Length: 399
Image 1: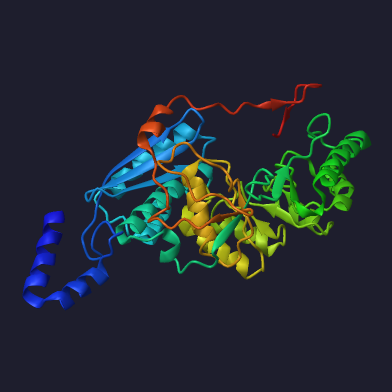
Image 2: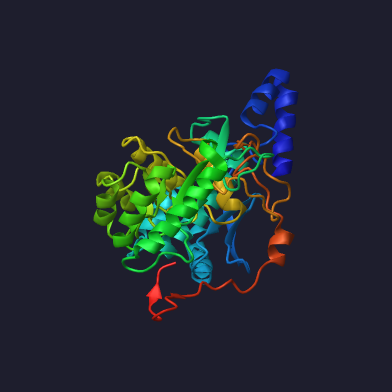
């Protein structure tokens, strides 16, 4: 193919002169891996499960362009195996038909949705966008009409050097409040600890509090009222999202915005959240809510309710990079979780965080280069997620 391109370039220059060559160059930038009209096919799909439980998918093409994506980590082996089955459909296809492939993978199955199926779709979607951006020589956000901003606010660890001034904490007392109706002692302990954090940082740091769906509704209401005076930035996963009406009821009982989304899949799951006003900050995860394609649509739905996105991200470099591409292309972006993270699987680091913001990545595709040797060195048995128990009576509790 490269010889072909050299022949065409020489022909233009010889037969039609410098003006024609300039026209040719306008269609194919130095950053683009192939010409815009060149054929491109998927040649191989591979998956990698790391000891950290991160799951990666690598999609190769006949032009040598490679795309990377990430999937759900809780069911790592199932996601990795399921993604390989999609190769039966995807190999031989043009990877740049990203939206078409999203529909084919989703609607080609009898059963749809759920964490594993949408995680598989999410990782593949990221990898296809990565290939497409590299093929055209531009970052993904430029293919979606971006940028909508010049830098991306992040939260993680408060740090004077990076300027990060937003964090998230859990509701901790001497233990996590997990019982069906915690007593006043536990409520007071959680409030006192959060107050101490607010006193330490003052009003210059935004502090969200993540209930992680592990607090029962009867306790959640008491904690919300006890924490309100100390101005949490948001209450995250105040309860499990399995009963949206319960969450919506709690949302009406506080002036602090509720945030949710890390256990919700596809646009249809977020539709109910928005319609019932169960949360005003959406936190879809690009690794298992449907990928870049779906997050862009969820953002559009949320915009009609004036609700911002704060993408969930407990994962690796593809997760962060893909989330940054979405953040750079939507108008209603709030902040990126763990956006200050640095990953040793990258051949070179992302642009450094300054003043609490990370510059938008400008390299093609997801804007990162995976160091495959480093990644393969971490392949192994994934870290298990163990069931949690009440130490007093031995019953199962949420975590």
